[in-house]
Image (cartoon, helix red, strand yellow):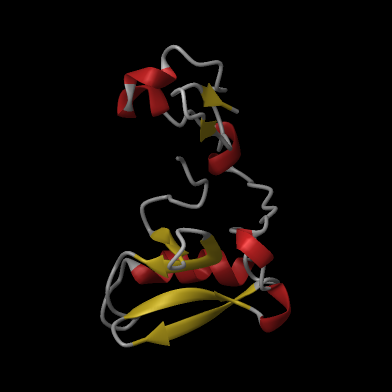
Length: 126
């Protein structure tokens, strides 16, 4: 399964039943003072460009940041997140066909952030 928020800087968090909680953990360790690669992610959050500013809060826990849902944003059974991408995330090629050959055969758009699922039979559906 493909997750639109997995940009290389954050990954989704799942509960014990394997459901997406709607929260995300930073891949990179540290904070903006100890890791210069963190600052662009924070700037994207505070500018509202990643669509999480109104629904999530930043939380620094132990050695990394998390995007935690605001209390009134908890989703039952994973729920849905609606994020409208802007700029490069919307207009540039995503090159999924270079990640896996199954995207060569699918009808998935070649630009932007496709929201896709894979059926039990292996068919890619946008």
